[in-house]
Amino acid sequence: MHHLMEALAPFRNRERYAGFIQAQHLFQRDIENLFHDSAVRSAIPDIDVRGRSAATLADLHDLNVVMQEEPPATNIVTMPAALGWIYVSEGSTLGAAFLLKEVKEKLGLSAEFGARHLGAYPQGRAQAWHDFTNALDRFSHDEAAQNAVVQGALAAFDRFADLLKRFLPKA
Image (cartoon, rainbow, N blue to C red; front, side, top):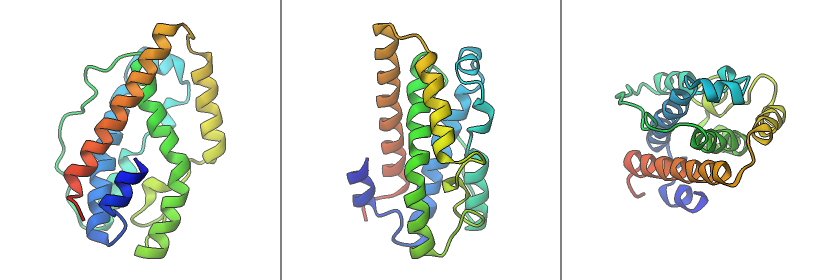
């Protein structure tokens, strides 16, 4: 993912950054679609505070970009693969601290304008990650479940890569 992000240069200018946010928005909608699953809600008690699609829409609004909505790609994703998808999203919140710094420096945006979706959770990035990984650790550890989580994570990475390529043509 790191190499793809470098190649697509989403922080070169605000226009490219807007494409990055559009990709983020659809990916976050995919993730939040999983929040409706009762098994997901049971596995991750604080799931309702983890969505970022509203923040991506606010960021797009700041940049005067109208998002074309589409159905979530996760309509057929169920537990335990859903945990893999959420793992990818939650892991990205850790790296978002570096991305936020970059958009501040290069594009003049902030967690209050244009880059809300890169901001930290109210409880902080480290605590949110710790809480999520604790929930993940409490989940079934049988081999089939673990494999399904890994396959879900790989599918999530593929989906986000596809979205990036769609909204950020080669730089």
